[in-house]
Length: 300
Image (cartoon, rainbow, N blue to C red; front, top):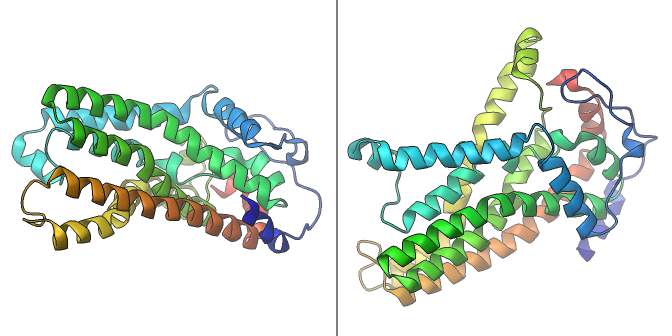
């Protein structure tokens, strides 16, 4: 995190923070200048857990609904349709696909809008902003990863494929950090305010601002997150294709699988650190626009 401080020069203050309105637009929230900013990573995590697990539990419900939807499709779709929906197959593949689906929603991209007051106050301090972005990644990870690890462990016990189970668990535990470090760019470049669907419909004019842009950003994670996961696996796929005895046409030997997972983890670590580094720089460069947007929920 020490390098984050180097970006202070992109964040020249331009005045006192402005007042924000709650996402339900029914009551005001404290001015962002009064927002409690984390002085340590522990404080950042505590604040993020409090935000995530406060009523209405929107993020928790979103992640759980994605997991339930994917599981239902995996077990109940006809085989022909299932083959078209899922490109990975096999017993341990279920845990991997479950992880990808549970991350593929707005908590992975819309990292600024739901926390507008604190984000507005933190835009003057790249170190604090970086701490908050890392906390958001960790909290989302803790909601998804334990569930997927239990699924991988249960599957490994049933199949007695212990080494493959271990590699699967390592992938599930490490690679998502790289994906989330990159997917946050979408929410930094194109944030939006969470608000009731009924309100959006009642105030649908101008339609692009309130409905069109929002719908695009809501749907984007479903394609972006799996695409990023595949991109992070590209070096491993290349390694397997060039070095494995049968390439990718047959089941990989355990040693080859392990080397590929290790490479994917190394790529994910670089993308996690580099992704947050770029995200903080992007937020600081867009500071003026972000302040104006986050202060005005009517902009959708």
